[in-house]
Length: 140
Image 1: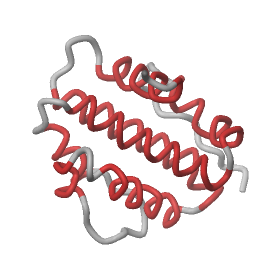
Image 2: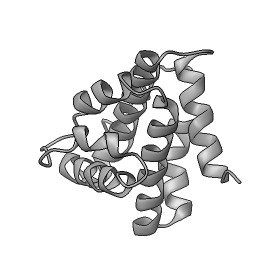
Image 3: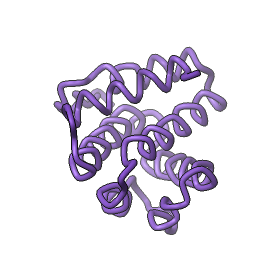
Image 4: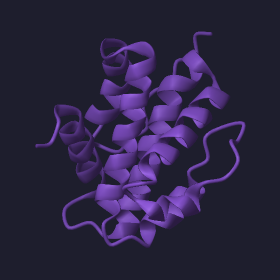
């Protein structure tokens, strides 16, 4: 049975990628979601922390989706999903792989800061099905 968060994430990805999306469209939509996640979290936890959480999520998802090994690399100073997009674009099950990785990230963040705060921070990302970038907080 699919969890509520998994359903929200897969719906967000499908909405951004479009109906009958190719792996390349899914990779592009996934990259846009990761950029929105970075925009939402970077002002709060910093670029390096977002990149580290992404790297840990890759590691946690590897057992179920070994193709993600190609996206592994050293932790960058900021989030770079270029390798991930390349991997996803070649996967026949790109939607499932991307959803699993995004769900792992969501669950990892929730384990650190709690589900309520995770929902407040990432909820707008999952609800932004238009594919437009989320506004960044420039007040700091």
